Length: 392
Ligand code: FAD
Ligand code: DHB
Image 1 (tube, rainbow, N blue to C red):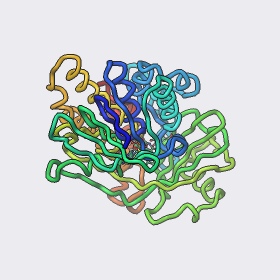
Image 2: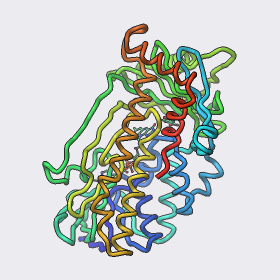
Image 3: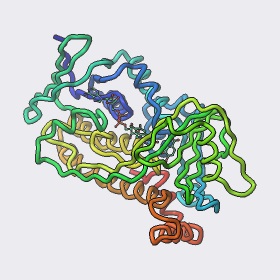
Image 4: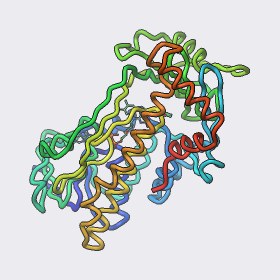
């Protein structure tokens, strides 16, 4: 039996769990992390790439932004396209100088993991949590398995940062929260390709054949997505078919899409999900454990980090000022931002995806919104400030 003792027991070494651990350490609060998967698996998992200004600032404060500053790309605007009509929304003048940075989530996870382990802290990989107990007492427990042995973490608080499929949310008492869920009638086929980006900034495009997004990872690697049906499969798409589709959907005059070898291809469903209470007794949920947003707008990872900020505020207040005030209101505070992000992600998703016939009522509303972005600085500002992330 492995027995660990700490102040905050953290389940999950994704962006939320790792950031929470490092931030608590900075405040002098101890924690240990257990992670279901292997280190190789977690570090290779291809996901998001868009970091809000807030997220970059937090990484900088935690001292884990050296590589991010060197290899990440700061963007000062974004292109929006509607049937080949492409416009640019500049961030600087609309948001008072706030920006986004493109840097792959798995690179963020590598940097955070390295920093945590460099400090000699505990992080057990291949250690799934199997039960969370005694959350209504002052000494909750996390039970887990590791290399064929059973283990237990005795702690003051449990932070479940264990993603959508983790046990954190399932360990909340039944009836302690309401659940909200929307499944969209389309998915994303995402690729990574060994080719220089065809645009220096991201392009979100509505096309009568469906949505497309041009993003990037470096000067040599492009990241692109297209809308596909929910029952579609990667095998249905040859590289040539993907590039042809991207060229049509992203196309505009005097612009050419560069093509190259595709080395990763996967389909992600689109979902909005959240629960209206993220805490019970000594158990707190953060990140995807409590909410999922559709990826249009790049909010998932940033929202996970925002939850952590509020959780750290609560734990700091408790340990450093002997007050439970902020901790007691964690869920209420975090949910304000989550609702805002849900709305913006839904707005971007329904604006740029094809969900009804070309020329239909839905289409006309989408087009009216796009035309309004072109003519109204106020509307463009709404998009810019939500996209770069509202200040805390
Ligand atoms: P996660 O990153 O999911 O981390 C949770 C961790 O907990 C995982 O490492 C998991 O292995 C571990 N875990 C689970 N159960 C247990 C257990 N019982 N015991 C111990 N550990 C456990 N967002 C965007 O903004 N843009 C995108 O393009 C985008 N693409 C995505 C593609 C996919 C396939 C997925 C799944 C998500 C995507 N997201 C995207 C969302 C974004 O990646 C997430 O919002 C972000 O990962 C949330 O971080 P997290 O730390 O809360 O959860
Ligand atoms: C990326 C993903 C997104 O969902 C998004 O809105 C922007 C960029 C990306 O993977 O680079």
